[in-house]
Length: 485
Image 1 (cartoon, helix red, strand yellow):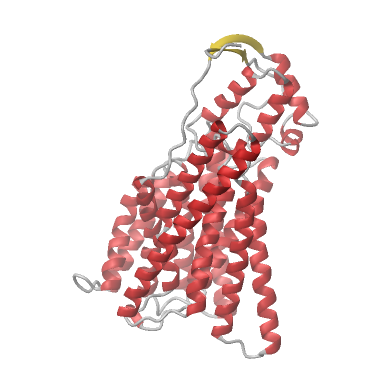
Image 2: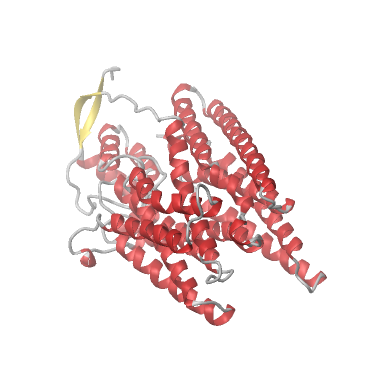
């Protein structure tokens, strides 16, 4: 076989093979490709294969495990499907394709970080404006539910986009589920913990907004998100800082509400005709979606703890969850380092001559990216603390340290998820939650009166354990060269 020409198979229709199988992770190989590119990439692998085992390995790389094949196709395992594909395809000469380079991190990622940080500013302004109408559990509930549903919708959208399919009915069903579940939990919170109906409305609207924004991210419409968030973000910034003038409460609520409604309508425009007749999930997708949903619950819970442990105390001039701002402001740097890591690892997978050499090189890149992000995070933390001190806001040291650990945990979680190992992310978050529950129980036994310093320290321990667990998971996950194809 020459360098310029390869024996390529022309795939023929195979009975029992769906045209667009699902079940791959949105961060698996091909998930970030355009419509139809994931399917064509798999077809090219099948066409060029010289042995059924090569096809079987490629199917597993694309997320078609034995469980998926058994549920969705008439085969007992991946090898049976690979043998059928190999038998039905024909060889034809074709020019060798050039390898597509992975884009490293750059200024574009900083802009994406600013867009993703804007909702936090908008929520902060709206929460301060409605502080007399919101309960302490309202914002954490919105974050937990919103993060969970947005993660589930992102998986469905990215996986179907990789195979040339639109998310379809997943959009509206996710929005309806987010609205109904959050409103139901809010009403239950009012009954058990006390509160007002305004808090239920705020939590439901925030959750729906996060879910709708995830749909726009799936379609690569970050610029539209930025334009829609502009009124609410600017209004919240003026309201919080009172520069150049003091903005009325009604105005900031109206501007934030306009951003939420506009984002919702922008996401609904992707709905197909007769969406209510389209199936939402298959049996093979349900378990993966549940895993992403559970991961979102854990992420939202840890971020929501900032709101609970550091409530507003100084009226409209306070900074609720000031310890979380460095993590929010460094989202762009986090995305930058993630893309740089994957670009370097992708190049190393072709440049190195042994798996051991690749492991050593990619782990060195992981350490370099983590250290670079830590430097940016430290700078952001120092800047935020200086501004907080100027405003008379004092952040407890354990909570500030917990924010740093949690930011690193999110960075390592992105690295692991981008390698297609979401189950490792979920396990690490669960380890942190178990640590938090165990520590809280021990403190409760020793000191019957639970105090805020003890809660802050328990949060620090849990965030540290999660960060270490995710760092170990990243150290393990990055060495898979197939995840950079």
